[in-house]
Length: 462
Image (tube, rainbow, N blue to C red; front, side, top):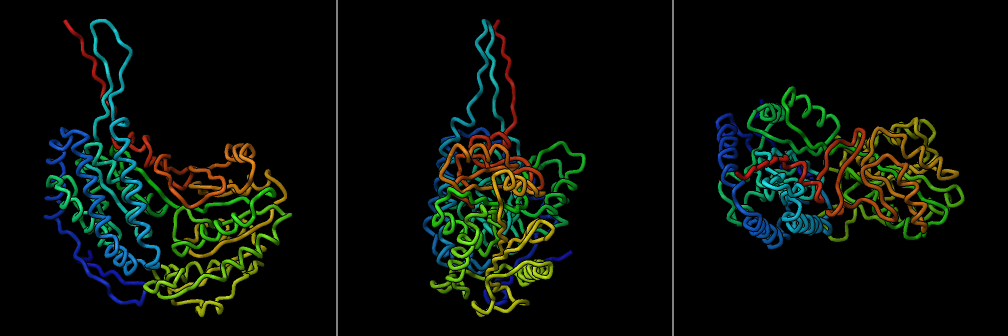
């Protein structure tokens, strides 16, 4: 078992940092501390918890610039964009703190003479959060802040690509005065994670990652009667109707496909366009794509940075090449971006037409700056193609008719349905998926339900 790991920066292939994995003694000490601290933490008031969590936000805001620079070095997103992740963290954290009082309030049963009856939302205990590298703060905040606000303790294991994010959380909670043991982190191997999930003192697992990773979490849970929130992959579609505001759709769908180098669970990976607008849409989409600047993400002019690893870029490029061999046409030459086609994380954006669902690029998650565009004759065909996927995280329709959008949305198999928007998480709405995009939800008042359990009180007065 590896005792340590290195984080290789996709910017230049250098070793950005090295960390040691926790040993058995550290793991035992951490879990024991979490269990012990939880008994006291659950007896604090929601206002006391909120005060601490607001101080955490304060720390994030005060350290935005340095945290953004760290993030760019760790996973490659252009520095002009990484501060927005801290702002997104603030938005989600503030919202979940703000609704905690009502979301965690007792549920009162109808009054009955001689009885007091209510349902309390009791904390689960210790929550294990397994966070990814692509949006390391935006994904983890969905579970960490609500879990702590609900009276749980949290153990965070972050991706080996972004270990500093876990350490930043620890610094923020220390700054906020959180009692010892309520929040902790560990650097761990996959084998260690599986062993920890089996520990009876872990009461819930919040995982964001691949379908294979989700399956591994389920396997590790085995016969344990605990729940896990699994936010997994996506192959998110967009449908451009004939009545669309074309310029708006093009601008937002290009951004939805290529922001973060396409490394977003809810990024746009396939687009269906009404046949009457197909050529016009594609021309505008390609023209805007060619305006991206691929390069060093530390430079402010850069709008498209490297992918996280060379292997990820090679995987995506192989998908593109297989599609081209099967008849697809690429409309953006890598030479326009001075990009090589293999063995570099700096991958040029790819726009493909003449694609179909027999091609992996239209059916399997790509997680790269690659999008396929197909013409459709009507809503019926668009809905059929949008649903022809093993995934169901988000989907969007681009139209000026809200009634038609609702009709389509009711038929599309997805966790979130957008009209004239994409690639965004509204903290007031449940973030959830269907099919192989996972189960459970975070954010909104419903996000608190998965982090608590109902405990009924039936009190008879004599």
